Length: 341
Length: 278
Image (tube, rainbow over all chains, first blue to last red; front, side, top):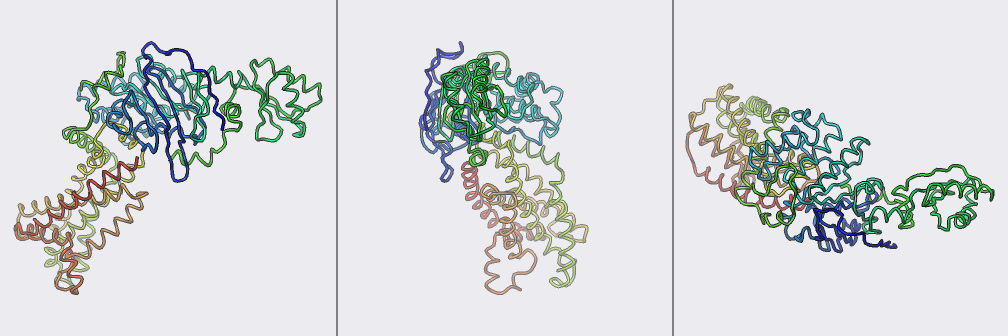
């Protein structure tokens, strides 16, 4: 598997963060039986930045995060958080990290307010202060009206917000967000993004995983792309997009036999290499500008290559993967189960 | 606590947090965290009252059923069987309640909230011990109801109120101690059903191969030997002595010793296997 290394991005993105590292990971490995879910990952997350881990289901994102959060044993390699060894000092790490999982980890039997109260008190917050913090967080996350309702009546978005609120009680300097917006509607998603940006403005560091290129683009200062437990690329979202192109022209040829001819035409017009999709007769062409799509289509038309369907889109995660690894986001079914426990 | 900053707009400084972090959980913290977990379990019980079905129904049902089925055969009539049987039912009910501790822990552990418990800087034993503290309430209900049902059926314990109270207390303490074994089963089994199955296999021989329902003298020698060393027999005898004679016999000591051994073995095992689950 080829490793695409981008140039390192510029200086520290946030004034609150220095040059010191919030997370330093070297050669991290997690094995489930024969399956190496995480296969030697290195990560450097700077203080005060939002770092995105981008990858399909089963790539090892959640497993990596769970190892860093002391929820899974580290099989090999070394992880440090703010210079503290994760494997050796789990109790210290738990005081430094707030974890918001892929599935809301709040108590279904309690109300929102009782949940925040429980988690505050468990972490040694004195009763009056716990009461105040709970009320403040409920307000901050727009949950005042639902504060005393059982969680079972909550929507998915409300649960996520409560879950994030519960992670912020002690205002940990590092926050892990595992696919924070998966399954949320666009409006709730935007709110979640604003909240995450607010955390960094307060001096927190955020490490998040996502399956969405646009989420990484919107939020992250830097992104690591992982696949099959390995890091395949790292850089700023802009660097990532440059590698993939600003938009993608997707072509489906009427006759799969004409693919070599089409490839030749694309090469001539754009000077770049189209990516063949596993689907027969489908080509993905990275474009620096969407306008260039017209040039390609005209050239195909004059060469008599017939097209069944055509679309110009933002590059999807799949395209990123095709561009970076030469294969799509396969392995979903086979590895996804294992990672999601 | 000094490390906690209110969620206003103060800047979070990582270096200060690292310096302020405590290296381990203190005993005091462990206790208060366990009590918070007990608070959670009590809230849960209050919102799911069906959890009390077993502790409420079993004493009523079993007491009536066993008295009328075995009473005539074993003791001549129901009334003279009650002093022998009620302490047996108390032991059996409390053990069944223990089993529910393991099953419910397993169900609870599958839920997302346990992920958060694991990610918090709290004592690893707190999420296990908390529900067990709350379960003291269930043992008390189960033991009290059994005696109450006995009284309704004509049981007049000669030990008096003090003897009966002491018997209930002993049953509750024993139940709580033995629950650690089922908690351990809860942490190793793959599903709540598996916990139920394994627990049944432990529970049935322990309760029926004891002196809970029949006098030991009627059993063949090899069985009597097992029945005599079965801790449940000691509990039943101790409970009988307390309730029927207000007598604190050596059996109380044996019962408490068995409890201490069970805790000493299964509490560390439970915490270890809970940690490994991560």
